[in-house]
Length: 174
Image 1 (cartoon, rainbow, N blue to C red):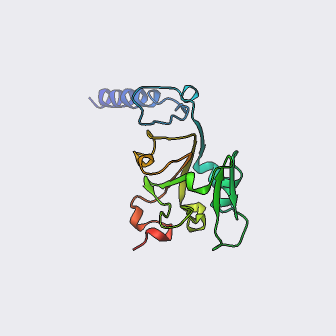
Image 2: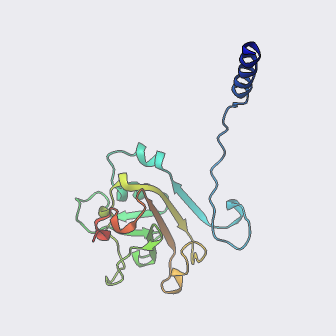
Image 3: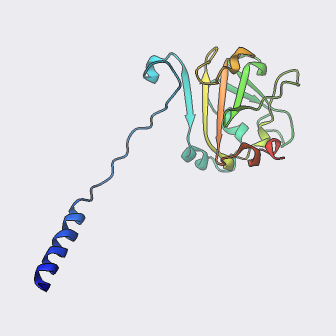
């Protein structure tokens, strides 16, 4: 009886060991709220995604300096001292045509003349992912926010924290 139990247990354990396989890393997929499935190459939108790995490699830079390195973006004041005003220009358009969403919440200050946002409020360590969408009127991505303002560029910042009210940047802290 003991031999049968031992052989049966050994067979079960060896079967489980052979069932383990190597994992496969798949390509990154960006899911967008469009009405039908479409490849990014066919959308006509230019999208730049800055991942967590790329953010970790850019140690010592501010968010404004990192965005200033992206094609088509100019951050006036990116290398100034913290606290100075930074203005985002895309393809020569004014900063009022740039919409910044943080975890789905528009963070541009509509009370200002130029509708700016101080990028110094973000620590690059609090950012999980950045998406830069270029092109006029991006209704699928910014949840109808373009109905109230014209956006030629949309910068989506995903932070590490779950609740936006408890996260950095400091404008969200109560």
